[in-house]
Length: 95
Image 1 (cartoon, one colour):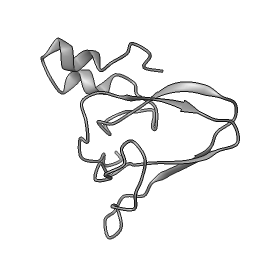
Image 2 (cartoon, one colour; image 1 turned 45 degrees about the horizontal axis):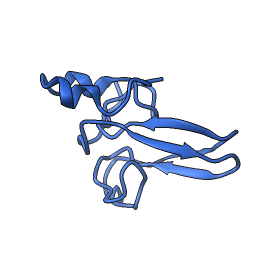
Image 3 (cartoon, helix red, strand yellow; image 1 turned 90 degrees about the horizontal axis):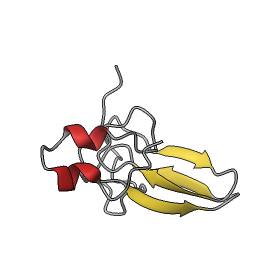
Image 4 (tube, helix red, strand yellow; image 1 turned 45 degrees about the vertical axis):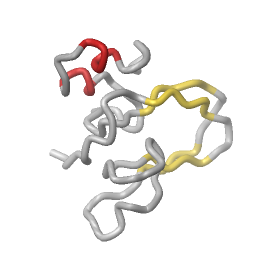
């Protein structure tokens, strides 16, 4: 089982991803630029997740770092709190 990062937030961030752009998702949870990497993982066992975006699309990116489909939110943050307002996380698009 792969170790998951620290919880950086209890809701995802909606990002308008742009075709041809390269993105670096924070996997450690320590970045000050969530959900993106700022290099804070240096010296840890974590590494950012890099991807080249194909096509323009809005997506919900995970901030809780517990997703099983990184960098995308899969709703895992809903297991972190019993508060429905926190669990909803600003959107229902968890694919």
